[in-house]
Amino acid sequence: MAIDSVISWGTAEVVASEEVAEGVRRVVLAPDRPVPARPGSHVDIRLAARDGEPGPASLTRSYSVVASEDGGRRLTLTVQLADPGRGGSRRVHALRVGDRLPVTAPLQNFPLGVGAARYVLLAGGIGLTATIAMARTLRARGADYRLVLAGRRREVLPYLDELAAEHGDRFTLHTEAEGGRLDVAALVSEVADGAHPGRTELYMCGPIAMMDAVRRAWADAALPPTNLRFETFGNSGSWEPQEFRVRVPRLGTTVQVTPGSTVLESLEAAGVAVMADCRKGECGLCVARVLDLEGRLDHRDVFLDDDQKAAGDRLCLCVSRVAVPDRAATRPTDTRTTDPAPCGVLTLELP
Picture (spheres, rainbow, N blue to C red):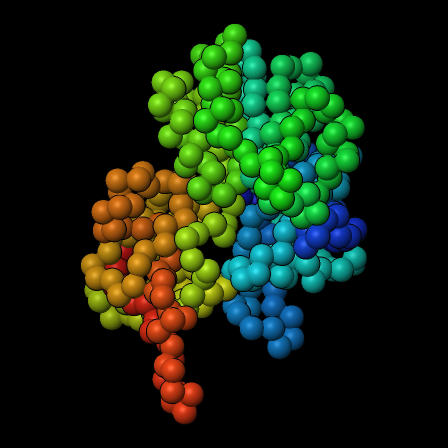
């Protein structure tokens, strides 16, 4: 397998944009310097604020490449509108044919291996976008594979008819609305009790809670940890994003983190240099030590293990947040007051 990790920025034009499911938009980019995208690849794009739009002037976001056609001359992304989210999806949904934007060449930190006896691709919701190209490649290879998709309602899941037609009985859909909630224990048991448990690779992308459940079941079944591979996407958390304050005493710096930005982005906007790489809560390079906290840590990474998260003494700046869980309930009942609801405060020592 190969990992494409060198960031090379160029420009791309939007050549197609259409809604493909409820709140989900397919956007096709034509890069000026096309590079084919391998299965599991993503691109980073920079999204400028339109006139009057709140939030940072520019946001950098990562999106999986659903399809790479004509030698990379057409890269298809598929983005679900996150509301509330960090603002990137809203700007993607506002893109129109003819818009131009900065985009990287395809990057890959979720490569599809070769040589496994069997593959299981597991997607939760819009995490499907990270696995579609993988499934297509495995089908072309003649590999033994399954594509499992779990979601709340089929109306918000894109490409269902195409996936059923392309993969037949290798594609399984679970929707909560139809009583078909995914049974993680059964899925992992199927791998453990199968013909090649030590040579089955499982690739997953979806909500943190789903992936944590799979990781625990995988470990309980004593399956090889290197055969479990995953990619995250941004906005899973225990609470909706809230505004909070971050203090860095060593630098004498205080920044406000809005619901549409991250700690990392807010510090960078204030001119604070912070080591970071993946910006998806996977690599751990931006983990910072918590010196003090008013509120609760809302861990949204997959780098820290359960014990480290429970300790509450560190967090990944690129994705994790602070929340005041009962914030709405603690708003002043006296409508004459203008006092805001309590705001979380995080005091950090940077790496």
